[in-house]
View 1 (cartoon, rainbow, N blue to C red):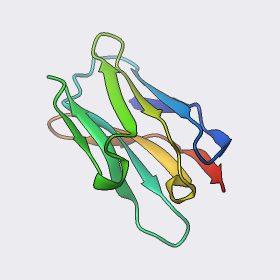
View 2: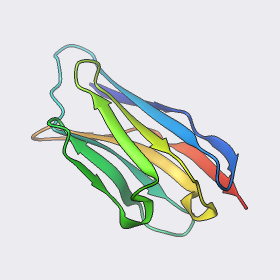
View 3: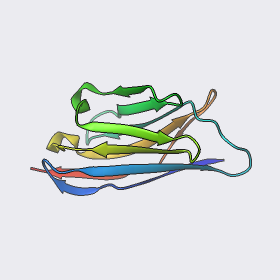
Length: 117
């Protein structure tokens, strides 16, 4: 089974930065993830896409984070990272790592990011 483990969340002041990391591990067979990404969910809101990256390094960003966040991945290690700069209070939420194969989608347990004003 596939397990995604996130790290790097925390409390930061507005204008600061954080780096989130996610490692995908699987027992048994080797997994080939097409797309990996990050979603977030703020209190009282739906989960939304923050950024995603394909195996070929094609990236997608939410308009609200363009120019501030950068997503990257290491295909050999099955890791995905999110560098978050110039953080704003509205970036606050639980950030979830996501990894998708051709047939299944997997989620991490989430890591809290809090940006104080």
